[in-house]
Image 1 (spheres, rainbow, N blue to C red):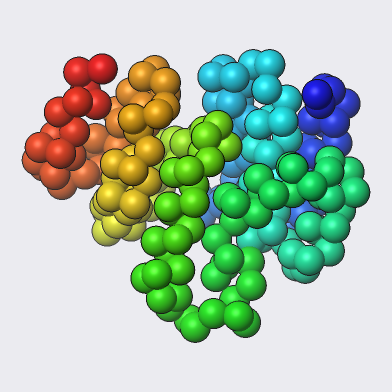
Image 2 (cartoon, rainbow, N blue to C red):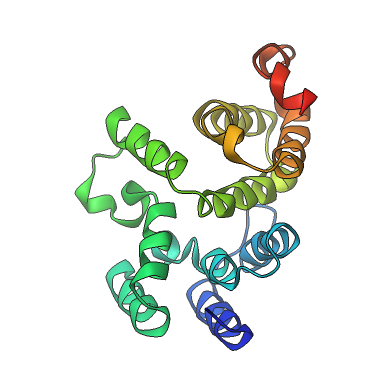
Length: 194
């Protein structure tokens, strides 16, 4: 069982890792994990482990040295939290020297497949996608469409069955404005009816 103090400790670590980063639309990057934790607090208010992972979910991808950050996470929160953060980490982003510039499709598929098999940790990814979708209004129309389609194809369609209906509805409705007309509605009859 994790405490509020440990959640604050995760927040402080995220603030250090993301301190010089900004989102595409100019706001401090730390607002993104803060939004992720907000959604996790709404959906799972008593799951402090998810809140910790929410704060840390991008630290391995965005930090200067993911191996050092992983050691810090291990020391502060234990191997289970580290394992969850690693599951949420795109390895080709955290460790670019280990992968070609464009990672093989098999690596990308393996990433999404292991997230599908990781409830409730995949709720962190749902909150991450919802936060990013809500920030897309600042992106170019092409980026909006590509991100929404990847969210729909790679994540939403694979994981929505095991997710609480209120969560899947929030993400589905955030996706709708960005999807090409008819793409989502044809493939998601069960989602909108849940």
